[in-house]
Length: 441
Picture 1 (cartoon, rainbow, N blue to C red):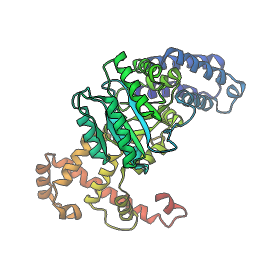
Picture 2 (cartoon, helix red, strand yellow):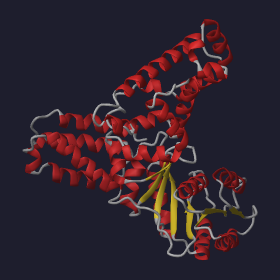
Picture 3 (cartoon, rainbow, N blue to C red):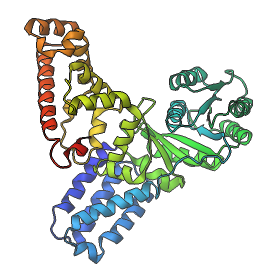
Picture 4 (cartoon, rainbow, N blue to C red):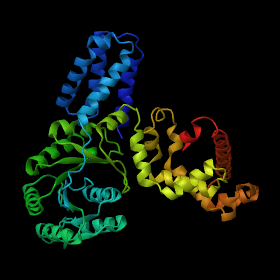
């Protein structure tokens, strides 16, 4: 997410950091470079102009030019203005005073709308509320079936209409069913088109009037760049949307849509899709997003992902083995690896740790390599996983053949496991040092 934009901004801002003293020509030259980077990232040109105007006004202030660390001051100004560009607050869902809260999800076909409904249901469920989903996209083939599958995976009820039926009547019936069932949230999936047309908008307006939603969330595909901003404007004019969900920010999106939509449309980005899994939906916190763009990490986001994805009981058992003196077996290694994989792609997680994203070689983050390690461990017998010391040369050859990997890869895994055991032994020895036990926990 934002990789190209992040790297180019980091290069430009790095020049400021290296200067002990800044002059006005240096600042203006650097801002011209930032302008070029933002336009290449497909940020709206008006948004870019206003953004740089605010940055220049603050950056040319005497307190920055005369600062002990003027480079860091400018980085902070850019960070603050990026956060302002993305929104001046961290918006949440507008919950109804009397349940159910009705959330109408709209967008064009192919934007990830139905998947977003499933992700929202999972997120709302994890927050302790009881959601229900309504399948009102009765025009697209298999749309009802897709949402039914997602609802089953999340474990929430669904009210589904008949393909080719009346979506307005289905939405109205879904609201009655939600009230009778006593659920706290109703998520309404609606039809899309390849482009905005009046029949679609008329159908959406009639659904809106039938269910009186508390939220109308527009789902935009970040891969479409400025086109997503124009489409958001069209939906807002027709429906008065309350927020935006940007999808596919884990792909090759240049970031322009994310940095433009808030300023152009005037509605907040509420959530961002960062992967295909049902847990891959992050809250759009402007300050944290700005930190990610400037490669400052996002520890809060990393902790949130861990809380959502990790099994607390398994995590406690692993911690006890790591720090309590228990034997850390290859079975434990596999459990730990699977726990981390649930949080998302490893290269994304590394970038959320301040200072680590740029230093960690991305070649080691290949998801295929993680699958290879899993195949090797699963090719071992239960006894071999619990007692790695018994794995001699002949056993390694058998494990390599069973997993379809080379003996060298098996040897590398065994070496990594041994090194991890040594590291844990050192950590246990440090627990007596002041403050160390709490830090490791």
